[in-house]
Image (cartoon, rainbow, N blue to C red):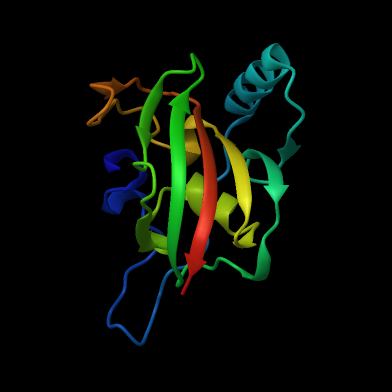
Length: 161
């Protein structure tokens, strides 16, 4: 679950106390070359996905219900994260959830989870700028996520608080 947690370089704000939240949705956008890389991956797999203005691509399987996840919400999710070669680099163990503040997640996850509500399911195709960027990322399952990797997350929201 290390891969879903992002160091302070990727956070959009900071929390000063439990009652006040300063998180906002990220405003980063992926450069055209990264968007083309994701498009090429999607085409090679025959996947039809929607382009978000940030350069993130997504497919919503279920929009869920109620309010959409916002940066100051705490979300509990089940997910699988993989690289474009289909190798899984991280996943929640069967029957468990990962819980964190939305605003503490990498930009691509924040933007994607903001599109669905409680019980929703989405597949995110995250370009490097909205993921781990140009830095290789060590991880528990896969020894390293290569620099400039496109990340594919299949995520279901179990709860939004």
